[in-house]
Amino acid sequence: MAESAALTRRVAVVNGGAGGIGQEVVLALARDGFHVVILDVSETACQEAVARLAQAGGTGEYRVLDLTRKPLVAEAFAGIRAAHGRIDALVNLAGGTLHQHPIQEFPLAEWQRVIDVNLKATFLCCQAVIPGMKARGMGAIVNTASNYGVTGGARRTAYAASKAAIMAFSKSLALELAPHGIRVNTIAPGRTATARVMGNYDPEEWEAKGSEIPMGRAAEPAEIADGVAFLVSDASGYMTGQTLHVNGGMVLP
Amino acid sequence: MNRLDGKVAIVTGAGQGIGRAIAVGMAREGAQVIVAERNAATGAAVAAEIGQDGGDALAFQTDVAAEASVGAMVAACLQRFGRIDVLVNNAGIFPRASVEEMAEEEWDRVIGTNLVGTFLCSRAVAPTMIAQRAGRIVNVASEKALEGAANGAHYAASKAGIIGFTKSLALELAPYGATANVICPGVTDTAQPRANLAPGERLEDRAARIPLGRIGQPDDLVGPVLFLASHAGRFVTGQTLLVNGGTVRW
Image 1 (cartoon, rainbow over the protein chains, first blue to last red):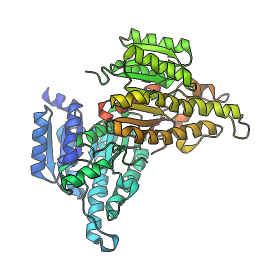
Image 2 (cartoon, each protein chain N blue to C red; image 1 turned 60 degrees about the vertical axis):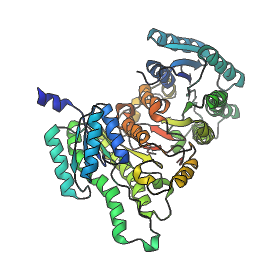
Image 3 (cartoon, rainbow over the protein chains, first blue to last red; image 1 turned 180 degrees about the vertical axis):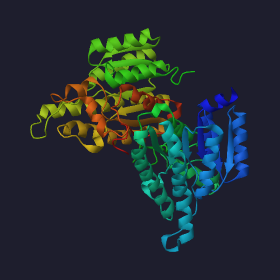
Image 4 (tube, helix red, strand yellow; image 1 turned 135 degrees about the horizontal axis):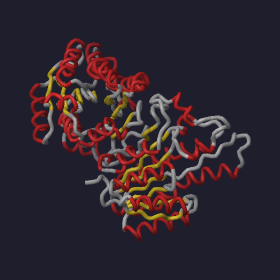
């Protein structure tokens, strides 16, 4: 009984689920009835995310790994499939990186690192989840871009390039997977009030930056999470290959 | 708890097709709905359908291209329900003609209904939304705004115009906490495209070029509109959502 109940429970994997936006995505998906598996690099942050999840009445678990290494990613997804028998949704959130370098000083290793944590991790997780979704003829994948992927940003060449690449990657994957009933969409957050981002500004500077946004402030992580939950849900069942910008009007592509 | 409990929504062109599905869908989520429709009979039928479904709707015969008609509709909404939380500008027409043979009157009629109508209705609700410091406008454009339409230049121009208009409106309303966004349907199973089919052509045949493998149904638009109109969409503004099975990817 318990086993069959477990197999009918919808499962979502959230890479970067222990981060500032990630924890809210985990809560939103739990609210929509998913058992959530968090993949992230920080054990402490994962524990915090799972504790918040339990407190909210959801169920979930975590795995700590480097998402840029194919064998580790493959092993993690094989483990999840073995434990739960299904993965209904994949949200690729991990990434970011706040390093800023003028192009003439951009170290190659740092450039490569940005591309890997944003783009390669997304690629590897998609590759690992697709066979199971194809076998079941259903699934939803949400990848994370950024307004920088549309506008670019000085001293952020690698970050902007990786985020634009994620949009093109997602559109291509949407075409590949549509015949299998799997949808692929992209969420593009604008400036978002996570601890990691806010830590780079003094309070007045943060306030001033917010007032430049048409809606007068940065996004709350929960507002990004609600957009992700929409793209995962059947409410967006006829959408694939699209990008949802949640940015308070900061960028209007 | 429904997502639009206590909210009042106006849906134009709600007597049939996509507009009807949106009006019914919002009523099911608790909204009181104005069914703004040029055809009095179909508008009344949709309002009655919502009433039988346990909802609360008022049909109001409206020509969105006529300033006085739009003003009367919005006044009726405020009189009956006392507020306006959501406006869905859905009314639109899609006659076919090549540019070479397109009559100026026909151009004016399409731009008038699709683009000017969207402007007039948005302008009419803006004072209320600004005073409430809350409101959601969802404008229905089309993927043709992005890819063009042979023998439908007026239509494509009107729909692309809606996108530019909506971005501007979003910037104007943002300081008041109100949002404005666009949804772009693809080929959708309604009476209007069926009326434009060539002899022997089937609307379903267009599924071949749609990645998700089927033409859209009016209900496919309901989820995205509810997202933009509900709490979940509170920080989304000035954006364009394509709900088209992946045909054009934005």
